[in-house]
Amino acid sequence: MPLPNLDMDALRSLVAILRLGGLARAAERIGRSPSAISQQMRKLEAQLGEPLFRKQGRRVVLTEAGDRVQAYARRILELNDEAVHAVRGAAIEGTVRFGLPGDFAESWLPAALGQFRQAYPAVRVDVLVEPNRRLLERLDRGELDLVLAMNQGARADAEHLATLPMSWIGPKGTGKLVRPDSVLDLALYRPPCFFRQAGTAALDRAGIAWRPAFVTASLHSLWAGVGAGLGITVRTAADLPPTLMRLGPQHGLPPLPGVELCLHTAPGAPSAALTRLRQAVMEQAQLHLGRTTRKGSGPGDR
Image (cartoon, rainbow, N blue to C red; front, side):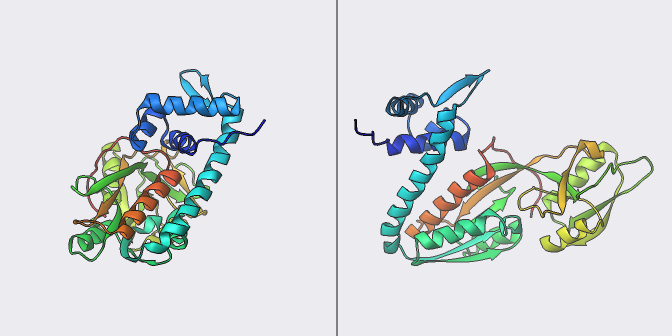
């Protein structure tokens, strides 16, 4: 008996369900009804002759067969998309000026830009790494086409990608930090900085004394100061150096809010190159940062 040809749309829906954390979210993103997505999953199960999902309490999780299929689904879709990009990419050209904060300049995003370059060799991407506030000022002046920025969800051009937790960060091996009659040393960015504002406000609410022991305008020097034990800091855990660790209540530290990550596109009709880069960044952000959370906003800048 000949083997069935797996439905590509159904495989894409399966990956979307896993990436976005649920069938309803996947249906909304793909533009299909939940019942249509459910039908696709039943079709896949019929083709494979195995159930892909099972109940675990109130949750629905992958079966062993489902876990095996999702791994192949990602590979199949990657090959499919690579083939399409290889043919269509040659027809797309132009320049896109892309700005991003230093938090994402050394982790998954450069690799994603490298993959984009391979798929669209005629597109030149000029990348600028600066603080959030400066990037958006450049976008407003027409100096950038696309910006990935944190904590600017109130802007009309903001497209929500994820809400990332802020974390206290210190050297590995850090023990309890907060003690009576002691002052907590902080490593901070120069103001204005919404991480600085959120961290010091949380300490003030908790009645914990602090002082700015190490102040810088560079993420590299911030990590160096924290690693040297000059003070703890507040950031997301994105691209966290291996010598550092997240800190929390066990160290005597108060909870922190989340920070919204958004894409901002220059006004006007986007070029084909800009549209493709924007799509690629969105897909990679969802893949590497996990499913998006409820949209929110926070104080400050940077």
